[in-house]
Length: 481
Image 1: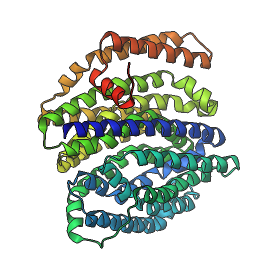
Image 2 (image 1 turned 60 degrees about the vertical axis):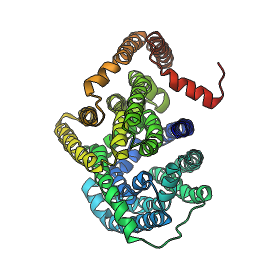
Image 3 (image 1 turned 90 degrees about the vertical axis):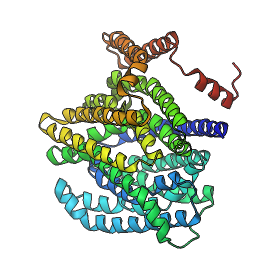
Image 4 (image 1 turned 180 degrees about the vertical axis):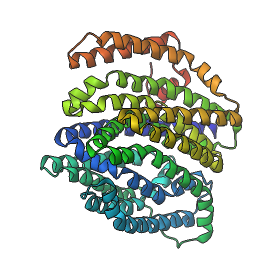
């Protein structure tokens, strides 16, 4: 049994990592092309709608996807009931947003948002059609179809978006990209899963799923409000151009952060759910995954932050230069994202959804206060407020995890001390290696080489790599040396 879980974990990890790297790389290429063709104002208009879109998506998911994964023995009644509920809620949300569109436009003083809201909101109905299929694949730890679907949808929607942008459609290129991606998922998921609702709505199944999923729903709503609050406030108190800079900086910081986070979040939750009754294994998996998350995530985020200026200027041109300090702040904030997702998965897999919800409410209040207090200080201060929120989120959850498995916040920092020393040495070397170089291309090349060499050298010298994980991955990939 243990070996089966281990094999499923590393197989899922391999496919999910391959998906994330391929999709993020492809997304980055598409992002670069679109950013060169479009203006910050175009991204700003979409950014103003981000919170309404995100909250609606949470309502559609309703935590039912997580509930299906967490439940040990799901029946066709469970899957069908979740499907009907998701579709019904999505239609209701679309109707509400359709009539709220004029009020949203008035709030931002942007008349274009009326039609944008009504068209973009079609995503909710389309997206609700494949929530169950996606959860079913994750529950079965069958990540290969997820990887293929994600790549195909990203590629097709990217072609649509770039073509529309090149033809001068402006902000509608972003709308077309989003809608085409969701539409492709509606087509591909039934093809790969061979599943369709075959049972009537079951009230008993609904009550069981809602009992777990409702807590996830509340935490999800708080999460998206906090994550998108800056966009609302910037759009209300500043302008759509500033929203565009902030939106672009956040989307760029999400690329490296979400690559690792999506890998761990997708694979780790179903694995932890399967072993949640074994306290020792639960704790062991948590410690090893957390340490490796810091080892691989932090250097990438910090290195990109150090090289943010040449990256932005080279890839996106000077018109996006105001996004540089925002990107640096958000990258450092995103360092905690992977750890926070691991902590969330730890509590959810144990069924501690009420505790998880209460913690999220506390962190949401702190984040709200931090962002609102930073409004008079400018957009850059609002970006740093997200860093403070992320740090508080991690510290609070670490305290709770300590109560569950006896692994304290100070123990974690002590176990990671040599990783932090390696990061400090890397940062110092990169800073001084590019400080007197004026050419952006040379800065990017030199900084990357110096950062990679120094950090890898420190890792090998301090024996930081997880040898058991390396051996397992080598075995999985058939590498002999």
